[in-house]
Structure formats: C-alpha cells, structure tokens
Length: 496
Image 1 (cartoon, rainbow, N blue to C red):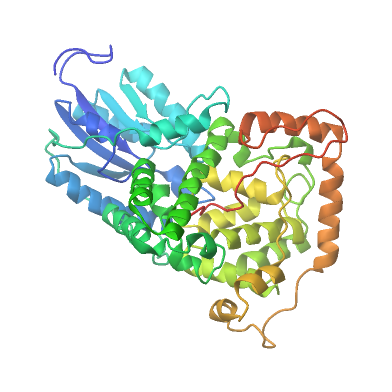
Image 2: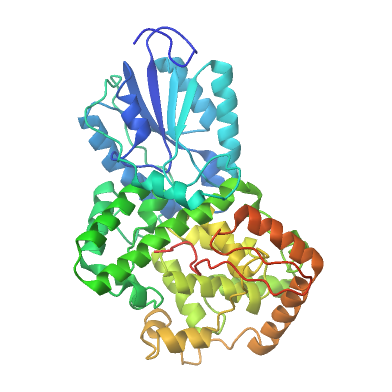
C-alpha cells in the first residue's frame, strides 16, 4: 500500500489504532480497519490530564490496566503490538509519528469528560498540521453533530442491529516489544468484577443464562440487585464489550426463551440499553452540562453553584461523602460504594436526591465524589443523571427519595444496613444532620415555585426539544399548564 490514502501522503501507510474506552478485540472497527494497512500498531495513552482530573480514582486505572494486559496478549498473538504509554496525547502521538512513520490515526468516537473534548480538539489540529488522516467510528448509539432528536430511536435500532464487525485475520504489526507500565498510584480497592473482555462475556452469559430472572423486581433492592443486575456497567463504560454485542445477545436470548417471566425481564433490560445511549447523547450534544445546569433559571439556588459553601455546608457534604449523615440507609449505601465501587441504580438515585434536597447541595461537588467512587463512571450518563436527580433539568419530575421509605421497601429486616453499618443502633452512630421535614419543605417550595414561572416554562420547552425523549411529548399552550415530565428511568449511572 504505497499510494496515497485519504489524500494525505504517499509512501508506506502505517496505521495507529488509538484505544480509549474500547478495550476489546471483538466488534472493533478501528482494529478491523488496521488489518488492511501495510504496517500497524496500537496504543493506549495514560494521560496526565486523566490522572489529574477531579473525577479520577486509582480504581479506574486498575480496571483499565487489567483489561489492557489481557488485550495486549491477545493482539500480540495476532501480530499487532499494543503500546501503553504515559504522556500527553499530542506530544506522545507526535513521538510515535516520528519513530514509526504514522500516516493514519484510527479510533472510536468518545463522549467523555471536558478534558477529553479539549484533548480531541488538540489532536485534530495536530493531525491537520502533520497531515495524518484521522478516522473515527461510533461504537454506541450516540450520534455526532446530531441536528435534532427526531428519529434518534430508530437510528439506534439500525446501528445496534447492523452486523457485528468482522474481526477475522491478523495484522502486519511493527516489530516492537511493548511493556505494560506499572504507574506509581495509590493501591485502590479491588474491582467488583473481572476486567477483561473474557470476563465481560462471562458476565453477560451468566445474566442471560439465568441471573436475569426476576431482574425487574430485583434491581431496586441493594440486597437482590447485586446478583440479579447484569453487572455489565463497568464493561460497557470501558468498552470491554460492545453495546451492539450486548444488544444482539439479549435479543437472541429473548427469542429463544420459553420462560415468560425471563422474557419480560430481558425486555426491561433491553430498554435500559437504549436509555444508556439516550443519556450519553445529552452530553454529546451539550458538553457544558458537565459544569452547569441544564436549566439556567436554576442557577445560583444551592451552595456550590454561585453562593459559596459555608462551613456548615462543607460539613454536611463531608458527612454525606463519608457515610455518617445519621440516615442509616443513606450511610449504608455510601459505605458499600466506598468499599466496592458499585451500587444499584435506585440507591444511587437516593444518594443524589439526599444531597440535592435534604442537604440542599449543588450537584457538582457530590457528582465528583460519586464519579471517583463509581468504578463504572461514564461521563455522559453520570452528569445527565446527576442533574435529573437534582431537579435542574427543568423538564423532569422532582424525584425526592425518602431514606426511611427506601429502607422499609428494600431492606425491611435491616440486613443491608447491618452489613454495611455495624455501628447502626449503637451510641456510636450519629444523630441525623438535618431536620428532614424542614429541609424538604424548603426544597419543594423553592423548586416548585421556580418552575411555575414563565421563564422556566419557556426554557423547559427548549430543553425538551433538544434533549428530551420523543416519547414524552411537549406540553401545550397556556401559561398555567401542567407539564408532563418525560418518562425517563430513575437510574443513576448503573442503569442495568
């Protein structure tokens, strides 16, 4: 392949596959494309901006490193070296270009945190300056440069039902001997699940093969969700399995099952796969929602969003982060999350609701704390859900969770609370840090009063048009109309 490709240069064409949140060898368009080049290699960049990001936790690197170790072995056996390098993206890519004559950069699209967005813009400028052809492929249902949400769901179906990428064959890799670095990071907690592509498939198979039974009834309780949830959220977040493969395997399991309850449970799970991408699309369309409210009419309401946090605010935030609020269900959930990196969807939503309404904190600081604790941190889902659960989208129903009600419904015998909160019921356990009734009265009066204003109504129409599910519809005319909230799920990050 000596002729010009992509109109950039002549000479040997060398492809560099840039791995990010796609740490697998199956259903991988950039890796498949690299097999057509005369020379190829792959790279994963451990970037200083990631390590310094406020949402980073060493457990994230631990998961990624385990996935990379397995992938490096598999790709090497098929002729493709995978380098794992620590360094800033443009600097490292330029060093690889100079050393190996890189002519083409191949990668998946990424809907990530703000630093990845700025990083990609810098890489695009570098590619243009160095005449390196950069091709990106989608790997979820997220659509780049989407004009509007009309037809988005049908597009998701088309993409997820399209044939899996053919990965047969090998690569003509450069003669390199890559080594996987061990970064000098604090020892994190062990990941809840194995981190490799093989682990992802084993987890999916066990779910479709039986664990999914009672999924719909079990996913809200922290006791039953640990077993009956799919536990695929980490694997989808880091791409050790593709959304398309999970979707198609789920649909196949639905069609072959004769158990009506299992079919209902799997259909519920299949719907959440669509919501996964729906929430990510919001961050893709409006990256600023990582930092500011969807509804600007809600700016400045809470400490941490305009008003400075007082010492009392800081103390309440610290108590919430450490699991010592005096509300047992809240504290038990935070303790589990701190110990394992995972928590089921309903309890995540309760944690955010408590921070937003009981403690009256803006979502950004609690969101960063949760991002560090969630092993399955997925920026698009995370920040969209933080805002939805905090009541700052302007279009969703205010979901205020009562910790006592959640305990009564999902831990009636106190098994969960005693497991994670051994001091509960003893003098060592603190008293509640807020008066629940007074706190919720203030939150409801403030937010419902704000939403009755005409500015909020007009803003909500625009937000719904840009980001809302088309199944929900828009409210009709009249300044005193009641708004029909979109029927979006109440999960927080781990939708399944």
